[in-house]
Image (cartoon, rainbow, N blue to C red):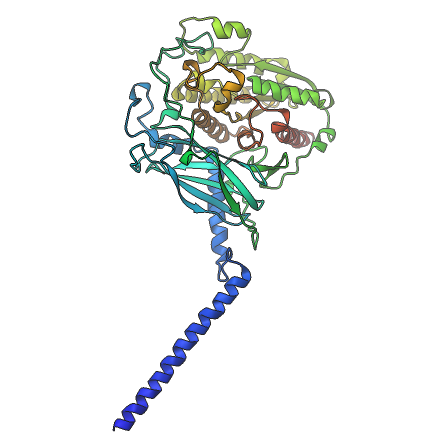
Length: 501
């Protein structure tokens, strides 16, 4: 009996040993294979999961350009001027805040990291409203990440790198406690000049600490490396597949490599298109000094002679700018009047130059509006302009121009001292000239134009990622929008081919 028990025990021990040996051998083989294919690409990687994840992030990127509601959500009910908290202990401290988590993926995949906001007392914040601005301009490419406020003290920074290599991110805290989206007082426009600008110093009270402009962890740059990929994901899908309907001249998202704009999606617009067609009638550009520079570049390229019969412009701040001196110094206690703008637009659209199929009306209500108006007033203006355009289209039928919304360019408020050396960081009349307010106004207008079916030339991502940044705080050199000029010409060629066929 004892021998039999011993025999059974030995058989079970042998089987157990064989099983354990098999398991150990299997893990050893997996380890070898893992090392062979590289640590960045697990051997049993779920490729379909990667594609789904890419599609998800890609659609988030497409939605970002129109998702103004997500921007305002963390600050809902907190942006009125009298809601401002000057000496609050809940203000975020940039030097105490830190990057909590990195998720750097191989080139061709979306990467991200997470910022944790912390107060000067070392308290981890559990609500949103901070304005973290992130640039990634040093490396094989220059790109503009997207920052998402989780409204719990955490901020997700998402970006798509196509070129592997070493990059550095500049992460700056501009504002805290919703000050970046802070609305002006109700009488702000009235107290300004005839353009609702240049309000007297001191009328806002103490604002010396509003604009923070401090780097995270006290570091001017944070370096990270993006490895090469073992497989490419063909995950670029149309905006409609993401549930977004927008008549874009070109997708608009991409990066700069060696001074050249490279869109993420295939782009067949090249400089050669300017010699591919003629016969367009009038190009009329309506906008501020950025729009003026856009037109100037087109003229220097000969576009206004080779393609269009003539080019015209309307130079606007809030209203038509007839005198810079008057706009800066003439005070009149009148509130904003949208009727002035609507009538001016009506006069343009009713002019003989705009009653032709092959004419173009390229317009924008851009950088000056967040400085002078509150968000509700701007929304009403944009909606009223769209109503006007729809009415004109219905009346004019075939004798109407091609109407295109050109988005605003990004700004760099931190560079105001390059234009005004004596200007303090927190100057009264510049208080509402913030990156965050401009981005909000840009998103609402783009969303509204997309819903209305108006073609959109989106230059915001292109300029936000421009490696040289602005020349002062709003203006760029001609190269920053050269690709947008080509997109406009390619779109015109397509539209003229439609009308001639």
